[in-house]
Length: 346
Length: 234
Image 1 (cartoon, one colour):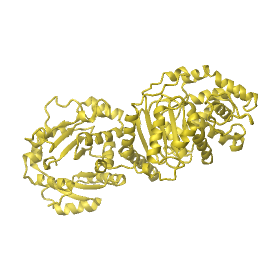
Image 2 (cartoon, chains in turn purple, cyan):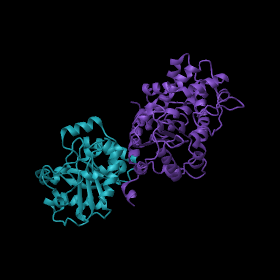
Image 3 (cartoon, chains in turn purple, blue):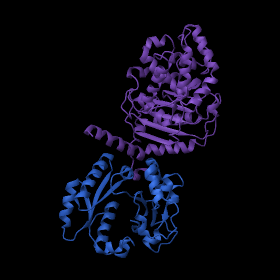
Image 4 (spheres, helix red, strand yellow):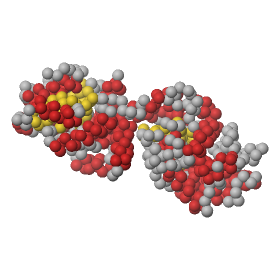
């Protein structure tokens, strides 16, 4: 073993111990046990597989750009990524075609419409943004590859780079999405009518159903968020998942459009570039600092995880994580290192 | 420490080779829950804490607030030791347990007895402790292993660290040994414990300080307590 790999090994081990001993863990435990009592919201039922989710599952995970991990709850539980996949696929499209070409097919304007609405920008015929289904379908249509298996392979490799492990598609969720995806097909045909997607858009719809069915854990999502926070380099593996130059585009869309039609209030109150999914996950990015992920299936009327919203709001308010808050973000950093018993008691 | 009038906990985190419970001679069948059960989520850490005040200190009124001594043992069952070694556990949960013990039992001090060597329990304990007490025998093998622990402890930023040299033969000059060990590791030596026939004869069948209150070894151990309490040492 070389001295640099030795240092890395020692650093990872000590980082793990520091995380386990850090007071942030106590903060997350307290938050988790309190917010778990909130039983508001309903598990998504629009596809049968999602309706099987356990409403009691609840996990919070924070991964820093230096690779420290703070977790509480069911952080190893797998669930389908759903709409959280959208900004990451958008990043791949940006890498494949560049900003201007992608902007020619998908806008970046927030919309007050529902995420699955069948509506395009009247002046340009583009979908409003890549976070609504129409925009996500147009985005995945841009992902390059010689055929469908090649494109699926590229998508999975991209998610694997972000997660730091090999990821898989859940076949039963994929089939469930596919069988019930008439509305998304309608959106696809409408966009085909305006020449906003390629003649192969039906393949792209398959790809869209697959991207929504990738299985992740809260830990994975926090690592994905930390990778964006870390300029595109996965802090756990050191692998580059996305070009740094693309990240500002992803994060700005996550901040303005990432939380369905709660996005405006989210940007106002929470101010963390984030994306939620109907399976109950939310991933957030504090640039240069860390990724945050929460999983809890019951959703509010706008399709966001009830407990997830509460966790993000509390973390943002308590630790000054709002992106536009000129105040210091050091309040949370101070909780990353071990605080010793006597300090805790006082 | 408990005899000085404090509420003290002793947790045995040497999961692979537990042993500290032996000193307290708990009757067979007393231990129903252990640290292992807590780490598996089967009970709270408080359920695995046993009040050994009377056995360790003697005639203490049950309702008195101080002193109190609690023991949190690890499982002695081979299957349970094998299972935790095979499956591992969430090391963060161990720290949660330390914090819960401090709060729920209102402890003044929690002593964490670790495996003699570097493993997850040892490192976590170092990361979370106010003071690290390193016990070392005057033996080259021990010195090598201790050097690694000292280096990792410094990287983990433990606020206070000192050494205790154990089992020192009678013909070794304790002052010279103290100076040698202290300069070797760059760490203060709080006590030099003599190799003791009486300790060997006690064979973990009793608490040595109770049986031999005036023994030189006991007096040295009191030096360790004084160091922990921040009191001037003799």
